[in-house]
Image (cartoon, rainbow, N blue to C red; front, side, top):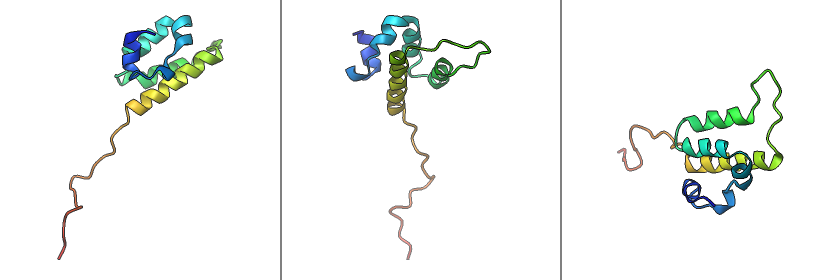
Length: 95
């Protein structure tokens, strides 16, 4: 397993994309490169959804599964914080 990929995956070996690494190393390289950028979600969508006029063959099921798992892990790692109100009223007492 690649040490740099494991760092990005927070050392979660269960998410390691072995098939993607073997069959499409250039795609995995790009995913790792943009992991912490806003480009990640749109790039993954472009990979998984066919927007071309010509039909794509698609990924083998095991590679598609690994891409989905990477998307899930990315979502867990990059949870957007809920907006907070401009004032905290939890300790305000009204007489």
